[in-house]
Image 1 (cartoon, helix red, strand yellow):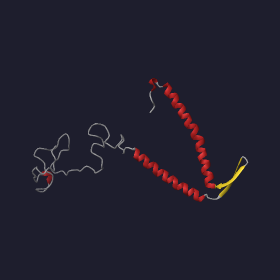
Image 2 (cartoon, one colour; image 1 turned 45 degrees about the vertical axis):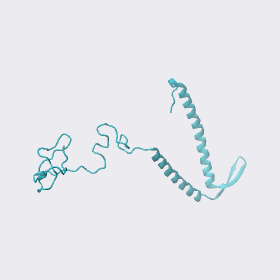
Image 3 (cartoon, one colour; image 1 turned 120 degrees about the vertical axis):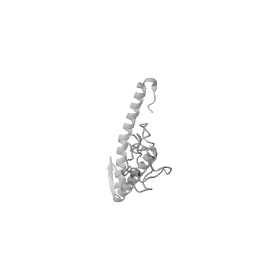
Image 4 (tube, one colour; image 1 turned 30 degrees about the vertical axis):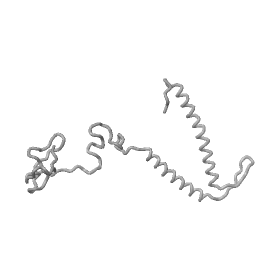
Length: 163
């Protein structure tokens, strides 16, 4: 279908029922095609809603593949930089909460452990306990994961790498 707003086409008063010289320019006999809507005299043209999404639904022209930068669901594709950015924001929030925690728990406490005793900051004591707890879980878990990967490599036909 030809562009109804093409300035090279003549205008007439019968174009969409408007006054002479107004309305879109429509070549005689061109009332639409299989690729676009028919323009009927006397009817107002309906503009497509401004959604910011291409008319093809955010996909390439008939290829079925998503447009560049979008995933199959039409969402913006995540990148490594966006993952790093989210990680930095989460780390900054964690550090802020940690500073608040240390400031609110700065009093000293006495610790007794197998005959040994000493005075430490309450915040430092709690944080040290949490770090030791994480290590007690992470080290054996990491060792088990490495053990399972080794066993899987041995059993994969052709000795392919797991990536």
